[in-house]
Image (cartoon, rainbow, N blue to C red; front, side, top):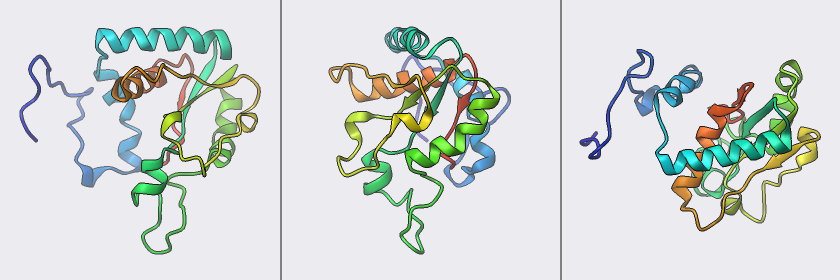
Length: 176
């Protein structure tokens, strides 16, 4: 790991040491909330998050849940992350949006969500799929979009911080 950028600080997230790629599994993903809680967005990203959060509350209600879909081209088509190395079949590491709706439905009911905000980079999804059917997630399901003029890095960061800002629970659907 190289030196940290000028102006950045390094902090342990609630006592957890930084994760190594080889240690990344379903146990460590449950610690992501500690990592995101320790991170802080820049002022520019925070303005984007605030705008998205206000829109989420207006459209999806005060008890909205964030659901992240790993459906962008780089996940589904350009890397081996979503594919089983033995069969080339898709695995639950990257379930389809319809499967995610089923996987998260019980938890969304338990938390009595008022609506769902879907998180994915719409401009990076292949036209050949996977396709998103908002109805699978129930009424008041939305994909919020920032202007394409906002650089992807900022749009992505804003969505990740929006997921942490959900008033209820961040339903992490990409089961790593």
